[in-house]
Structure formats: C-alpha cells, structure tokens
Length: 405
Ligand SMILES: Nc1ncnc2c1ncn2[C@@H]1O[C@H](COP(=O)(O)OP(=O)(O)OP(=O)(O)O)[C@@H](O)[C@H]1O
Ligand SMILES: [Mg+2]
Image 1 (cartoon, rainbow, N blue to C red):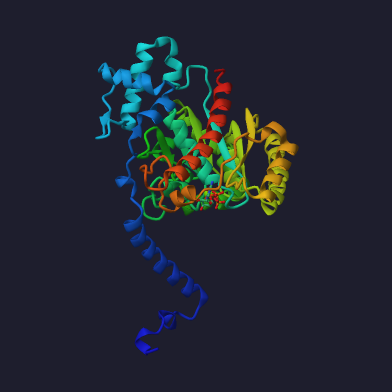
Image 2: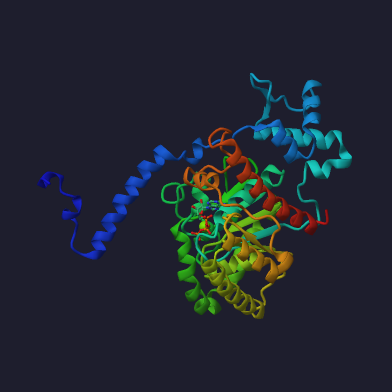
C-alpha cells in the first residue's frame, strides 16, 4: 500500500481524549451528510394518504358507507386512483370525523373521541431499562395509532439518545437547540421555559413532540445538586417536575406518550410519577426476562421512595407488551407462556411480532403508517401492521375504559 492511500488513522492525535474528540467530529459530519441524503428532514416529511378501507377502520364506519358518502357528494372528496380506489389525506380524515359527528350526533363521541370535560389526561410511560426492548418503537406506533384514531397526542422523548425524535425527522444534534428538550421545561435555574415552548408540531397530523438530545443528561447531573440546594431555591421536587410541565399543556392533549430512556435515573422517575399508566416492553428471551426482574424490583423500590416523599403513583393500568416476538421460535413461545402464567392479564393478549418491515421502517426513519404501499412486500407489511395494531387496540380500549367509554 502506498503512503498516499495509508489509512488516515496514521494522522490521529496521540492522546485518547483528542482522538475521541476527532472521531466524534468526523462521525458527526458524516452523519449529517448521510442523514441529509438518506432520511427526510422534518420539514420534508409528509404523511401519506390513507385508503378508504384504512380510513373506515380508523373512523369506525364501513367502507361501503364511505363509498356511498362520496357518491352522494357528502363529506370530504377523496382522491380517485386510475383503478377507482379512493384515498384520503390526514386533514380529510379530520374533516370526515367532523362531518360524521355533526350528521350523527348520537355517535359524535366515537367519531371525535377527544376528551370531554371531566375526562382526565392520560399519560402512558413506556419503560424498561433493558436496552433494545422496543420502547421507542412501541411509543412511536402507539402515538401514531392514537392520532389516527382521532386523539390529540403529545409524544415526549425522554431519552438523551433521541431515537423517537429522529423517527419524527428531527436530528437531535442539528434540529434541537438548547432548551428545546423537556429539560428546558424542568430545569432548576432561571433558564427554565414554559412547557408550550418545547412542544413542537410533527408532520404526523395529531401528534406533537417534545424532542430530546444530550442536554437531557443535565437533569441527571443537576438533580443531586438541586436536592442539596432546595431549602435555598425552593421549587418543585425533582420527581414532580415532569408532571408539572405536562400539566401546563394538558388542555391541548388527550393522551401523552413518554418514551423513557433505558435506565432508572431521575428523568425516568419523573416520568413514572407523571404517568397514569405504564407499558413495560419485553423482548421474550431469557436474558431480557432476567434483567426485567431487576427492573421490576428496582422500579418498585423507587416507587416506594417516591410515595414516601409524598408522590402520587396511582396507575390506571400497567401492562407488559411482548415485542419483537418470533412466534415460530419455541424457546420464545415458552417464555411468553411463562410471562402469561406469572403476570396473567397484565400481559397484553396481542404480541408484536418480529418483522423486517418494522426493523427496516426503523432504519429508514419511516413508520409502517408512513410507508407507501409497495415499499415492502404487501403480505409482510400487513402482517407487521396487524400485529402492531393488535397491541395498540388493546391499549386504546384500556384508555377508553379509564374515560368510562
Ligand atoms: N417488532 C419488531 N420487529 C423487528 N425489529 C424491531 C421490532 N421492534 C423494534 N425493532 C428494532 O429493534 C431495535 C430496538 O428497538 P427500539 O429502539 O424501539 O428499542 P428501545 O427499547 O427503545 O431501545 P433503547 O433501550 O436503546 O432505547 C430497533 O432497531 C428497532 O427497529
Ligand atoms: Mg429507545
């Protein structure tokens, strides 16, 4: 090999610190270039149109009824493909909901399922400190599903790694500035901002987002100091701050979905305190189940501490969600059976299947709800979406039950 083509590592600085910092800046530059070509930025992302079959399912009427409406010239006018298929944009789905609610007042609640006076805001925390147990994927699909069902959803990315934010097209390093994460609304100093200032819209109609980036780590560092300083500075206790921030915007939303980081730090404790329900994701493999038992023990310890300090932890429901499940893998099915045996009805009936469609959607930063039909094989796409929706429908029914519906 000639000197000219020698690997650049020869020019690397000697000190480990300088090397790390150089690698970081090289990688960051590459990632920015890559993401610009590979992943659409938030400003370019757009939600696809939905077929009338999908819309009928989401809105809760039959496809035939939708066809009749459009033949009669009532409600929004769907686009017609050459093959005569009708499709609706997200804003047309919203228009359709309003049209149906007005023309069938008796069923208005099912067409426009927003919270009514007296219905409480529901805050669902998706947690487990096992990395890769599909917390972010579960939070993403739940938030998007609830929005398609007609709810006003706030997704909060509480993980400094910001995977949820990047699924919504916001690159944590470039699109999220100082004070623009939840940290901006829960920090202890004068730089604290109103929660409304850190909530931003997303291209996905019905979902707003509080994005994340590394600055969230500050909360883990500042909290021990704030606890010492508290007599001087006053203010909310650390574990109440997430709940207080959410309370500031509560009238704008029906459901808040929090994607927790894979550890039980102060941020996660804040989320557990703000939550009215908890979903614990679980990849059904022996190592993951073993570490989940640690998670449950530690979580119940932490909850005990929060309750002793006067925190409120009355969950309407707690469910285990089996994710990334391969139903053809015998050891996995045994573990699922074991979980059902141990936790009974606290395990969702539907399991989310392992699927390359979901994994690929994660890689290309487009959820299954965004992919145009044909982007992946139709059968694989539908199997994956069915299994995701199966779990989401169960969670939706739990939320509805809390609202007494
Ligand atoms: N049902 C599924 N089938 C196949 N791959 C999946 C499925 N669900 C999630 N994945 C993939 O598994 C990986 C981990 O998922 P995800 O990021 O949602 O987990 P996580 O618990 O949020 O991880 P972390 O602890 O790092 O925050 C991702 O690459 C994701 O695309
Ligand atoms: Mg995650």
